[in-house]
Image (cartoon, rainbow, N blue to C red; front, side, top):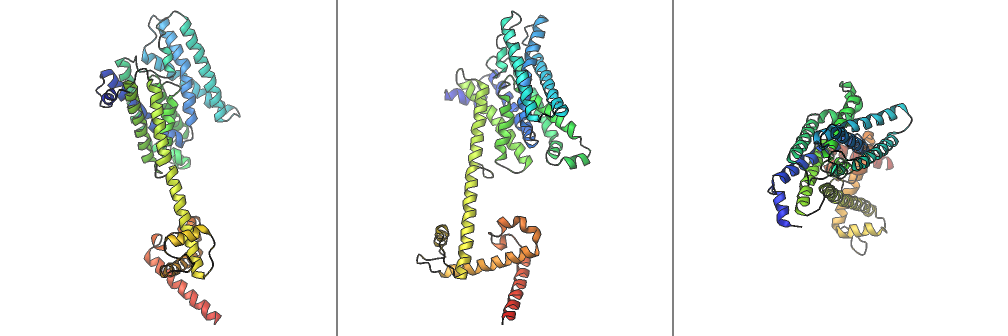
Amino acid sequence: MDVEAFLSALTFQAGYNTTIVTIGAILLGWAGGMVGTFLLLRRRSLVSDALSHATLPGVGIAFLVMASLGGTGRFLPGLLLGAALSALAGLATVEWITRRTRLQADAAIGAVLSVFFGFGIVLLTVIQSVQIGQQAGIGSFLLGSTSGMLRSEAITLAVLAGGTALAVFFLRRTLTLVAFDETFARARGISIRKSDLLLMLLVLAVTVTGLRIVGLVLIIALVIIPPVAARFWTERVDHMLLISAGIGAVSGYVGTALSASIDDLPTGPIIVLVATGLFAVSLLFAPVRGVFSGLYRARAFSWKVHRRQGLLALDRGEAIYDKKTIFVLLAEGFMRRDGSITPTGVVAAKLAAEEEALWSLYLRENPDSLHRAHGMLLDPIEERLGAGEINALRLRHYAATRQTMGAMA
């Protein structure tokens, strides 16, 4: 890789056309990440696959129509219009199948995807065999190609991508409400069907925009991978939206720069590979849902369980045989190697026994909190309840203890 060329592409100094393509890829990734977020939340991710493959017949038909009218057939707005109309036909077919037949959505998507894509391949074969227009490069819509992109084409794609991103931004509240609570959305007067149709139109806009850059085969990756990666980082929709858009934009930015700095390296696949790399980083290192953070939380929870059970056993004077519990008590200085309890352990054991009694009393008086007890009981009670509530629990616990001792006497 030419490092100097890579840095020039990153700093937008690799030429005007490359800069425009890079900006278009950034906006495409941003828009794809934003639209994909709501598509993922609505569990409609595979619809984008059907839409992308359904664009191919439209590209072929648009080329034949424009070429038969005396043109070259390579007019990009005309090709994108044909792709959009074809994708709309595919979307309408999927909806008709799911509404009028017993087939599930996944079966309908698979059928439409395969039929439309097969028809598109046939049209591309026909285009390559007839002497009409300028056929060279029409197949680049499969995997994308920016090497021969004209400045006007790059500007057109950048404007489309930017407009789509703005549309998603202004509609984010409605789309979020529909994604999480359809009943409340209906009560607010929002049409669920119209909202879903609007979302599909936004997906269509991203798909059509991305045909020239990443191709119809790979555009689904820019719609699915960024939001899936963003989901590892946050639990909030607004944060997920920004992170997903950022991952998509970085993928387009870095992927385009890499493609510009290495000869014969296709832009679309490199953008997808960069997005995949960011997904892998998110999967492993994200603090909310990442693999390593999950392992850390599981280890911390296991440590808390053994600590609490060991201290309760020490308080009751019971023998401890579990090796992990013994290890935890030794590590925290609560027990000596001969099994005897240390002064620190005596204090900690009494505190653990008191907390166990207070938590038991709290849960008896507040049964609605039982669903949270799995995590509550292992934490210091001061971290979960207020000082006033803890003091009241102590008074009732001591009163109940004295009453029990009096009854025994």
